[in-house]
Image (tube, rainbow, N blue to C red; front, side, top):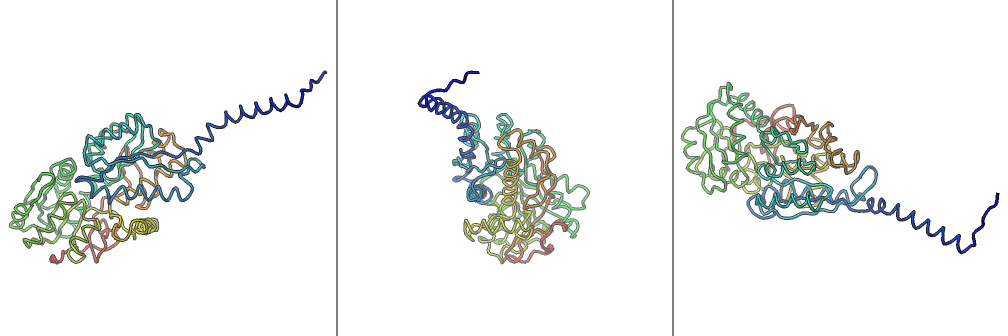
Amino acid sequence: MVERILPKNRRQFIQGAAAAVGALSVAPSLMAQNAPVRVGYAIARTGPWTGGAQVSQEPNYLLWADQQNAAGGLDIKGVRRRIELISSDDRSDMETVVRTYEKLMGSDKVDLVLPPWGSNANFAVAPLANRFGYPFLAPTALSRRLVEMKLPYFFLLLQQPKSMCDALVDMLKANGCKTAAVVYVDDLFGLENYAALKVAIQGSGIQLVQETSYPGGVKDLSPTLRSIKDRNPDAFIGFTYPPDTILASRQAKEIGFNPRFFYASVGTAFQLYRNVMTPAGAEGVLGMGSWNAKTSPGAKAYFDAHVAKFGPQKEPDRWASGHAWAGLEILTSACKQVGLDRKAIRDYVANTTHKTIIGDVKFTGSENTATPGTVGQWQKGEFEVVWPPKVATAKLVTQKPNWS
């Protein structure tokens, strides 16, 4: 055999060319590993949705990105990649919400998306999630219609109207309530919760003595509250948004309407409610809530980290904030297990029992069926979980104190 020995300079040229070709073949994967994970969302920073969005959702998105990046980035199947948040103000406008998410998923082709705030906005983008194949873990959507749409990429973390109203009626019945009055905002959230209450109350022995809807953006509920006061119900139930929750509470105080059970929904679990009403004024008020720092060690760690980042004047709320963080925990775990393949993430979310700060989360279709319906109550400056007893952080106070 004759061995051909190339001149030194020619050997060096060929070796260098081969190394360059090898580098070119490796470079795309190295670049992909070093590229940031682009996470897109639209959220209300102006307009009427801002109060809920800036308490329950966007602070959690910012905290999550900070924590992950401080650890070197989001774990993508063992490789850490920094998170780049791509976000904009949806201006509390439905058309802006839809247009923004179409762009994020359709032309920008971000790696992951985080959901907007509120039932109505999520209802608008849910079909887009399915069309573009992006998993959505929605922490502020209450809608039986969303569940019934059976969209495989859309998951609702919050307990839905049936489970929340079942828990409320069970609590009222167990504690001797005989009469109740209900007011509800005339939109998807209010209508679905009112319908669920009507079903839950059947056969309970509780009589609804007044049922009144009101338009979004209402400025005066006193005529309705005076009418309800004249009927002297044991319980007041309001399916209300944060401004309406505070309005109803203030005006109830002004007219001296103080039933045994005063329940209002979105916003009651916010620090803002306690601050506006004062701790003494909020005492005994009931509402939608599902966790606090006593719920689990993870919940305490999350609460402390949130306060450390945003300050003691911007605590997480004791309902949807916990669900928002649970959704981010699930998404983090999915990326670690299956990477950024969105179909694989969807399958992981759908088929796993997830351990989160609010307890187990398990989806049946789009609905989280593992987290029970709950009722919260302000007690001595903390919004305690008071029903059902098996998940309670404090015992229910069955007679609301006089407004203070």
